Amino acid sequence: MSGAKRQSKKQRPDGLSRIQEMNRAKILEAALGQFSRFGYSGTTIEKIAGEAGMSKSNLLYYFASKPDIYEAVLEHILDVWLAPLRMLDPDRDPATELSAYIRQKLQMSAELPEASRLFANEVMQGAPRIRRVLEEDLKGLVAEKSEVIRHWIAAGKIRETDPVHLIFLIWAMTQHYADFQTQIELLTGQNLKDPDFRKGAEEAVIAMVLSGVGLTPGPA
Amino acid sequence: MSGAKRQSKKQRPDGLSRIQEMNRAKILEAALGQFSRFGYSGTTIEKIAGEAGMSKSNLLYYFASKPDIYEAVLEHILDVWLAPLRMLDPDRDPATELSAYIRQKLQMSAELPEASRLFANEVMQGAPRIRRVLEEDLKGLVAEKSEVIRHWIAAGKIRETDPVHLIFLIWAMTQHYADFQTQIELLTGQNLKDPDFRKGAEEAVIAMVLSGVGLTPGPA
DNA sequence: ATGAAACCTGACCAAACGGTCAGGAAGACG
DNA sequence: CGTCTTCCTGACCGTTTGGTCAGGTTTCAT
Image (tube, rainbow over all chains, first blue to last red; front, side, top):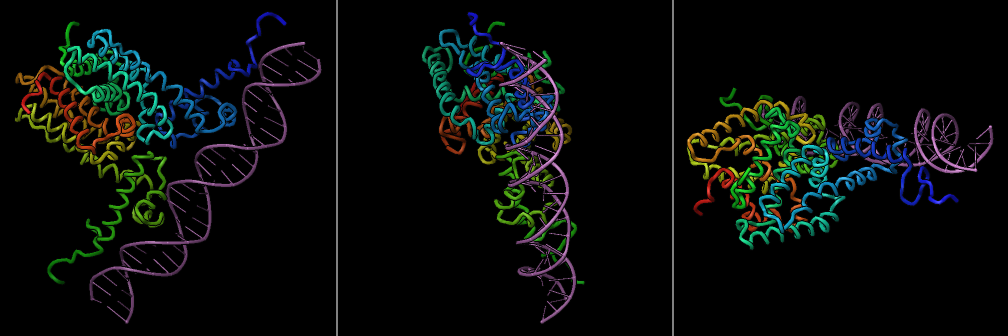
């Protein structure tokens, strides 16, 4: 009767109760940690539950099955993961855009290395659950951004380069710092969370990419 | 009594019988395929046995346990995997050496992508079984080859660059084509086994690295 | 040939895992 | 307060998996 419908609890349409929202978030976070470290098969729902501070039964109250959890985590991450590439702007100059893109990708590797590893894991196993997204969304996105790069080439702003390889190599370099974090730590004692090391990585990747497309590292 | 000891069968000291040699090889190959695709936990010894054309029981006659198989595969691969880096020669010119190194790494990604993926998998899970090798052998090797690069810098042959980042980025770019083979295939329909694509990858990586260290791609 | 060692098999077992279920505790609303 | 829904638990179950074992078959040197 009162004007606005109360939104505190029990909404079927879309919203979740406070408890649901909290617990689902805790589960997804714990699941990301486990799946990224131990892979799909190496992760048990009991460990996820433990990490999320609840019982296995309770976890199964929120997610019906293990595949359900895995897919939820994957979906939850994919958007974030592809966001930086979407921002490549053909109307700004390539040095700025490429530098910004690399910095964003490295930031993600620094702040969400688990996401990078989960994604790598999924792809290495043949991408059984994200084939569709890769074939459709990602393929389209890459085609679109390849066009941006070709546009820069045609305008004489950067050297002739294969756009697709360029994109792959930027992914490779930036994600490497997350995926091989352990190895990097063992060899250097540092990772992207050390500001100095991160700066070194940024400079190394940016220098390589910019000079690779025929741009001098340019002004500070 | 007879002068030379026969070597056909039953030698404890080191050699294996023909049957052992053959079956162990078949197991290791099958295990590489399985572990690299499904990870450690996602692989069952029964599937390995099936792939190797023998029964689970028989496989366990050759390797006492699953960890045993895994470690054997890993060890079997590590030498091959690190070989190219060992060959970096300070006395030859950097353009030749770096190009050759990149080509060798890409060749390995083309011919043994499973090995690359297995290695990546192991490292992503925290390198629990090859920590020692990384901390000792690989760390030493990287330090040694960093010195080579510094030597080139000091001699004015290449631009000032952080040697460790340079090595990481070469690893990243070359191994990416093996580790993310599925994604690359979904996006481009090609992989390193296509001669054209491989050539494109070689050119892209070499161009990027050489210009990254201040060398023009130079003569054909 | 023959006997011993090497090779192989199928039946079996205990532990771990994903998932179910009946029912109890806590929270929201009249 | 009462009651209805949501939230949570522990016991339980079927399957899968790594590994064992007793015994059979092949291989090979003599």
